[in-house]
Structures are given as C-alpha cells and as structure tokens.
Length: 90
Picture 1: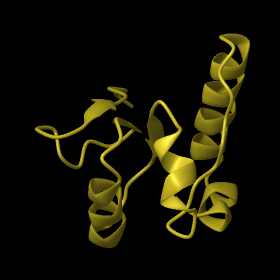
Picture 2: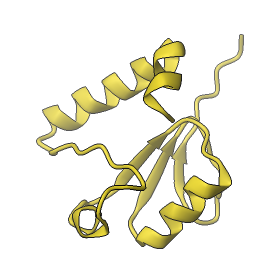
Picture 3: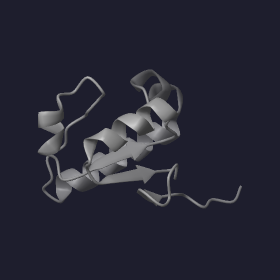
Picture 4: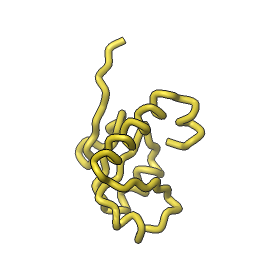
C-alpha cells in the first residue's frame, strides 16, 4: 500500500504502527522496501510483511524475491503466502 493511500485510511496506518511497535519490542530491525530496493538488501531480511491489498504487479515482484511473506488484512495467494485476516462483523 502506498504511503498516500495509507494516510487516507487510518485503519491501515494503525495496523502498520501496531506491527512496527510489536516487532521493535521483540528486537527486530525494520526496513521499508519497495520494488526499487536492491534485491541484495532484501535477501538479508528474515521476512516481509505486506499490509493491505496488492495488485498483480506487486505480487509478481514479491514472487521474484524468494523471501517469506506474511500478508496482513488480505490473502491474495493462500497457497503461497501466510496471511492474517481480520474477521470483524459490523
């Protein structure tokens, strides 16, 4: 999800902030990655967290990385990636 889209939807902003707080408290170092990030830098990461829906180009890019990926609030490829999806009835 782009930074602009995240700012327009406080749900995703809150989800990202909560994830960052938890991972930091657990001692993990965080790095924001984009398709322009060097693959060598990404290979050093233990996993990637993706928040919100992603389009086909982003999914294709993730597939090339060969890294563990966890999706939050979407499950685009349940056979390929782990996902945490909220089940909130309104």
